Amino acid sequence: MGKVGITIKKIRKIKGMSQKQVYSGIVSRSFANRFESGSNDIQSEKLFKILNNLAVTPNEFQFINNDYELPLVEKLIKDVYVMYNNHSFSALAKWISKHKKEEGNQEKYVVAYAEILLFTFDHATVPVTKSMNVLIEHLLEEKTWTLQEMRMVKMLIPIFANKKDGHLSIKDLTNKFEQNCQNYLVNERDPFHISDELVSFYSILFQNFLNKRDYLNAQRVYNNFSSVQNSYLTLEGKILLKFWLAIYGLYFGNFDKAEKDIVKLQEMQNLFPNEFELNMNSVLTVRRKDAVYYRQSIGK
Image (cartoon, rainbow, N blue to C red):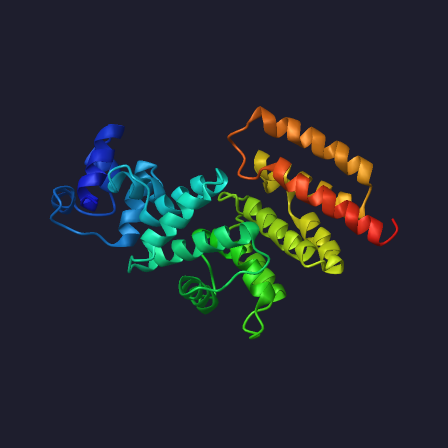
């Protein structure tokens, strides 16, 4: 990772801006010279003002300052998702074994996340490993979560559904997630697409209840889905919300209409085969069969 000032100078030159345009009213010219040579550090408040003048977000700056590479935790999670979405579970198991030896907290959190993904794919219950405990304790201790933590916490739902120690119930976890989502909704806008994460969270909650044959609570998730502000969602988020509402329909609503809606959504997904994390066909295969079983069991 390079010196902050040297990277700032690099960005300034790319944009063709003078020192005066970037630093005026923030630091002196002599300080700016020393800063851009790597000799001076700068307060974070002043750095944010400089980035604002450059029209560069802190995330983009971090990426450039890290030699155009993602931060470690983002890179690790991206690697995990590639293996998971391609069903490369043997490779994912080897990745977990390799990174379990790392000492850094960032690696530990992602290892825990990867373990949960691996276990929840084809196990009814999730054994809580040492790495998972590190992640759980971290999330319980923090009153607020960052975006990265919110993307991870939804995968803990199967664990909290089976925990008996009373530290945090599914209801508590849901409330905490929703409260943290509100922090990222600004002036009736959703700049970080947190509403998509909310749909994802509710979908895992919904499936957890279905897997446990807890159909009463599964029905109640409809209210959660309905509470999501549709205008905040990305195109993928809107499609996935419609998909999960259709899955809900297979169980508790108009079965024929739900099937027709799913066909339309699958056609739309097929237009962008590499853009969706969720494989609708795989989910539908499981859920349609289970929905038919449920309807037969209640004579519907």
